[in-house]
Length: 72
Image (cartoon, rainbow, N blue to C red; front, side, top):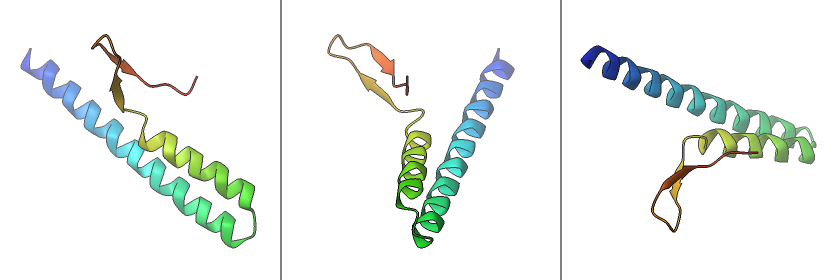
């Protein structure tokens, strides 16, 4: 059982690291797009960065049950 919990923690940490990397890359691409005068593309990359940085965020509903936010 402890192996399963450890594996789950490792997978969660890897997912967090990957989402952080995607967020950082999207911000870098947004800056490059803005420097090139592509404001709309920069905006889209910033939205992608925001989505990646909040992908694992949870919020609590008024009934007290945590719900996961989705982009759908």
